[in-house]
Each structure stands twice: as C-alpha cells, then as structure tokens.
Length: 239
Image (tube, rainbow, N blue to C red):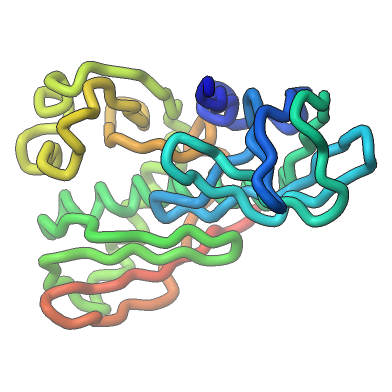
C-alpha cells in the first residue's frame, strides 16, 4: 500500500483538502494524503473533522503506526475508496506551530549560553516545556535567556525548511549539536528547519514562516528534574 502523502510537511498552513480513504481499521482510517500531524517529536496530534458521504466525523487523534498514519474518528466511518474532505482545527495547530518554533530558539539560546543540550520537550497550546541536560543554569539566569530569545524573535527572521543529505548535517550544525547517533542509520535525507542564519536543526514538526509570528515568550518556571536535568516552562506572549 502506498504511503500517505504528508501535506502538512509541504505546507503547514494548509487548513482544508480533499482526499480518498485507502484503508479502514476499526475506528480509524488511512488516507491518500493528510493535512493532520500525527503525535510525535513532542508535538501533539492535530484534530479536526472529515466530511464523508455518510456525514461528518470528528478526528480525535492521529498516530503513526509503522508505515500507516491512522486517523481515529468519532462518528460515521467512511469506506475504502470514499472521497472525503479534511478540515483542520487551525487555531490549535497554529498555537503548536508557534510554540514549536519558539522551542527551537529557546533550545539554541540555552545551548549557546550554557552548553546544555535539549534532552526532550513537550509542546502544548497554552504552555510548553523543554528539558536540558547536562544543565547547571539557575533561576537568576532565566531573565537573560528570555531576553535573548525575544531578541531573536523581534528580528522577524524567516523560517525555511530544506531537505539535505544526512552527511551534510555536521557541516551545517557543527559537531557539538549534530549528534548523528540519534538518527537511525536508515535515514539518508534530513528535514532541516532553518531560522534565518541563526539556527538550523532537524525536525519533522510544523513551524511558522517567520519569528515575528511568535510575538514573544515568557519563561514561567525552572525545575530540577534530577541527574543534571533542568526543565524550563514557557508560554507565548500576545500583542
């Protein structure tokens, strides 16, 4: 079976599109192509709805299972071959996009200032967090981190996506940040998110087109998670 075309990677701003049902598995369907991001990489699942010949179904969760993208539905289940129309919960997705781009900037600032690598993150609509390790920065350092992040945001830098060969990653990112051991050996092409000339980092998530869309961030909490790991929680500020 052909893989689902991931339209959200081609255009993160695509809110609606027509497609065809390719498989039905209990309460879930696979589609010829999709605008819905499946949960992963710290970014939550998209939600929305799909208009089917039998009526409108709510998309409650999207998940990648092997080579399949499963769209779990609440409501009428379409049949294989049905033409359907996808509608994204855009307000929620756009918050995820802004939060995710902000995460890249916070991660780079903390790495530059303190040499701490990003060990994990969780994007949410209202607030997000990033875990850094090994990390030693203190609460007194947070205003400096926040100011530096907002300085980058205020430059309205373009956010550009590029597909590059795996072996070019080290040259672009530098040896300290491009730990190729984290990438499966089967990955030969890497999706690189570039924020102006300031940062470049591999990512399969959805992002905004420029840092100006973020407006700004506010760091709300620092918490020690033990074993040299520090968690920063942040939220977006609105104009």
